[in-house]
Amino acid sequence: MLAALIIVFREVFEAGLIIGIVLAVTGSVRHRNRWIGGGVLAGVAAACVVAAFAGALSQLFAGMGQELFNAAILSVAVIMLTWHNIWMARHGREMAGEMRAIGQAVAAGTKSLLALAVVVGVAVLREGSEVALFLYGVAASDGGSALSLASGGVVGLALGAAVCLLTYFGLMRIPPRALFATTTALITLLAAGMAAQAVAFLERANWLTSLDSVVWDSGWLLSQESIVGRTMHTLIGYTDQPTEMQLLVYVAVLLVTVLLMRLSGSQHGGRAVAAG
Amino acid sequence: MSIIMRKLLLVAVCAIAVLPVSASLAQQATELQVTYSKGQFQPTELRAPADKAITIRVKNLDAKAIEFESKTLRVEKVVAANSEALLNVRAQKPGRYEFFDEFNEKARGALVVQ
Image (tube, rainbow over all chains, first blue to last red):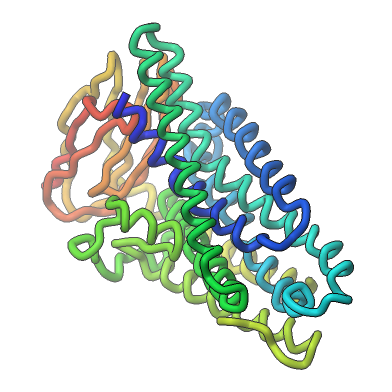
């Protein structure tokens, strides 16, 4: 049971963190639960489909289907997160303050919610397909141990939900004025980290081989497999052995986001709301 | 929105430009094979020369999916029931690199690089 608990928890941990952040980002937007819930459900459904066709997916692109699929969905999440940040730079001011703009901001907020729902869906899909495969294997095995393993899985899932709530309530303790800057920074780092992960998948698939030497090994300081390491991996894209290309892409996403936020903020209201 | 689109296009073009480099490197890799059956890896020890890229073909003969993982080799890949998967491992320094099935940690093995 403990083994199942650990496996399921490890997989849902990352999704829990991301959903917690998205909940905090969308704190004041109406109907946000419907969108985020929809993202989670779509993610679960997609995870089951991916798990069912895992064998076929793996055979695509000369055996590199899994890696390329992961790189592709991560890239989608990066685009959605970046787009959300740019959108917020343009409209964040209205949403945070002026009452008369609220009606308009809520209507426009739906667009940004769709982007974040996609991010949630992708997070659930990535982690969920492995959980689905594992639990399917459990269900396929004999009855006695299956029940114990399944209950371990349920507890692991509940712990993942707890991570999500802790992240959300932790962020909600931040005063509203500072919250916007904090979540903007978090979303930007999240996007950069995901882009670096996408690079790692392309490298594993041998699709990306330039600048692939490891720049440093900080595993002795903070292992990527430890709880803190895993948290930092999800939040800011921490990797104990980053390649040159990963660092390059990471920094590029940060710079492009800040630049686009500045441009987009100044086009609209004269002054940029960008926090980066 | 148009600015973003242009940036994305640029990124896509850059990515495509890098692709042709990949084919040549993959061909020189050491090829290894490991089979998973009845909850065990076979063989439990693989050998490969140092400083040369490695590809590992993992055949899963069981009716359950496995996740082939090695923390030190930095690979992690799901292998569906009754199927096989290919993993690329970058050139390694001499040493012993352990691998296991993340869904069943009793199944373990190691790659010895010399």
